[in-house]
Amino acid sequence: MTKTITLAHGNGGQENNELITQVFYKAFKNDILSKSEDAAVIQDGTLAFSTDSFTVSPIEFPGADIGKLAICGTCNDLAMMGAKPKYLTCSVILEEGFDVDTLNRIVSSMQKELEVNGAIVVSGDTKVVPRGSVDKIFINTTGIGQIEQKGISSNSIQEEDVIIVSNSIGKHGATIFAAREGIDFSTSLKSDCASLWPVVKKLIDSGIKIRALRDATRGGVSAVLNEWAKQSDICIEIEEEKIPVCDEVSGICELLGFEALSLANEGTFVMAISKDQVDSALEVLKSHETSEEAAIIGKVTSKHNKKVVLNTAWGTQRFIDLPTGELLPRIC
Image (tube, rainbow, N blue to C red; front, side):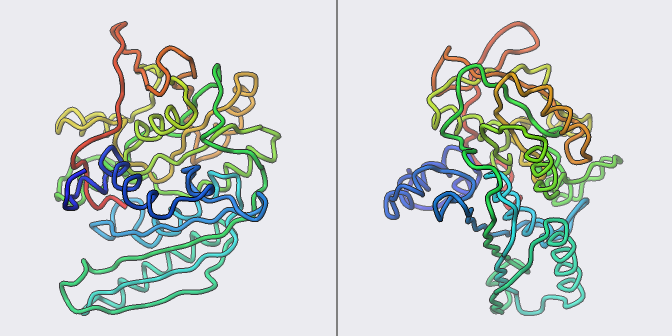
């Protein structure tokens, strides 16, 4: 790892993984943290606990804003552990001169998303710093959720499990890039930012036994699959032709050289599930508006343990590695 922090260290990929492992995990090592889940499972498996900070630029973009993003981000991390979001804290750092009307819009969108999750903010903190010390507004949210299905873990994925993605991928990263650069693609492309607890709740209530869940935020689907392959000591094979990517995202990727698998999502999750439950799970997913594009993209094998293999449309294979370098800074 380099001796100074670069933007690449926040990309959700290889550099970010090294920073977390070599600095934070090394200092704070304990059995709960070492599981590397989306949220910590505490209190004998009854509660999930997570925190996240949000610094997206621009702070308002097609489909959402930093406020909705902050609530979805933390509530989704809880949902990925089978937990119903219940209580959140909210800390805000504001730049001197920030527009109060904009702040009211952001807080209003936060409240709307809390209602979607059935959660409430119970504590918080506000700081104002001199102009130029932060970029407009930074938000931190911490959440506690009640676990409704125990045993969901990225450390317990098994051979022959099936890999499902809940939505077409890359919409958030592509939207943020276009909004930041002022690019008008004359399309309806917008962030997929959405709360995932309602659809996870539907899966649980339908009796679906989920092996693992992970929302594909920084580093995208490629980061999730690589983390899973290492944590469960498995090989994940995915089929290029089965990965759902909308035309707008495909166009941006082709134009600018991005990889859709590495672009961020904020309302899309990856799920590992036993093959005997696939049909039931897909039926539930496709009945919900946030996951109606759900698709099987691959399976778990033992071909190359700790690796992700992409079977291309041309009949060839290649490894999908953790994203490296500076991808899209400030996407969440």
